[in-house]
Image (cartoon, rainbow, N blue to C red; front, side, top):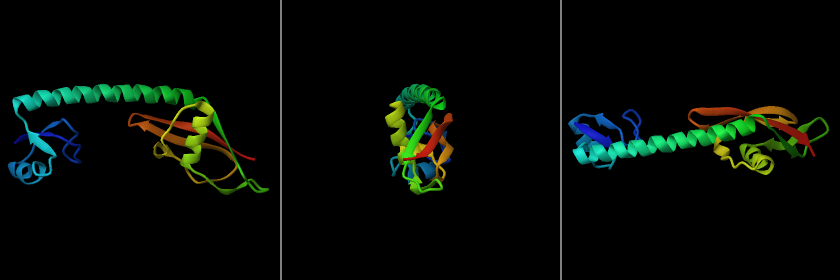
Length: 147
């Protein structure tokens, strides 16, 4: 049976995809949970429109992420923190700290969940990985200095 997915489903596809599934799987699982609808002519054209809109939105998101990446790759973000005599921090620098510093210094808002920050517990220069889009991953240079 051909169905159109109404939500992303691991193993089957993304929202708006037309997939072939067994009748039992469609009737007993996908339809009752609202995860799919039957692939009629009207639904197929609606799914094609949803797919075009998703592709357009995805390309716009990718372009925005590439613009942010090109702006941040060249910059060094400085984070002043309290540190001891040997450069050991009182606490650590988190993804939220990096996102706040990027907002303050580069005027670019980043979601802390998109940043991969290793444990930063001493002063120095670090590379923080940012993944703003599935196709756009870039490093941000972060310099941790003592106040």
